[in-house]
Length: 339
Image (cartoon, rainbow, N blue to C red):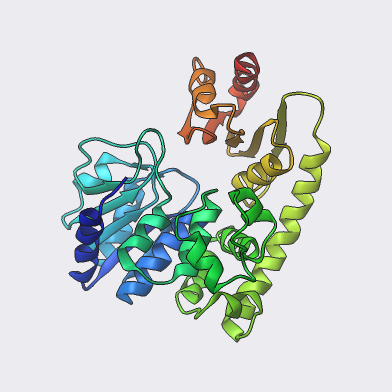
């Protein structure tokens, strides 16, 4: 876990920059981490990193065009060394995935004994504002932080303090609705995503968003509802694919990636199964894998990747993987053997 001294160091980095650039992951935790930092400094440029767990050299042109005086990398488990090497301004990397050594950055990671609280938790402890955004990021990453009680006292209609499991907070509360909005607006074209993200930097409170009180909030809700229709159709198909196997496998082809959202909800609905959701794109199967606490999906994935053309990794009970289409059946068979 990080210390108060670590939080102070990150805060000083934020306080001492005039033109920051923020790279963040395309999930609620990454988005909320960006919102927390941006709303604190009230300036800079956000860049969502989609479709890959790695921040790649392709983003060097974006850096060159903006000319930041400092770069913050939020909730990305991997950064290509070539990207770091060619950046001539300070890089502050804040994360909670597997710890990286000798990164060449100012690196802060909350992981300890196999667990690290979500990046949005770290960011909240740094900026000490926008509690509702911090809760969205934390619960969106299946984690109930120690400031949950404070949140429930301030927003009892969004989350009751008696709820003790993150999955219940995610799928059975008004807070969960906001998190789904955050997740779904990250789908689709980057230009459309960033238009919604820009609006979120100006939303005053959760009720403005939930109730569509302003024209800006209504714009986000309209886009969210359109994407939700697509998701619900896929969810219905995924539920129908359930059988007596210990594995719930669902594959699909779609312009938008819902693998993480689908695998999370399927795990919530069928907690005894190991869930694999795979999206076919460009000759690859992009997968999200989930399992309950009695199964270490990260170890299973590590073994299943042997002699398979692909890569993957993540948390103990939530992983991602990218497998060449021709090797996908072998990957699934390897998982079945491990199960």
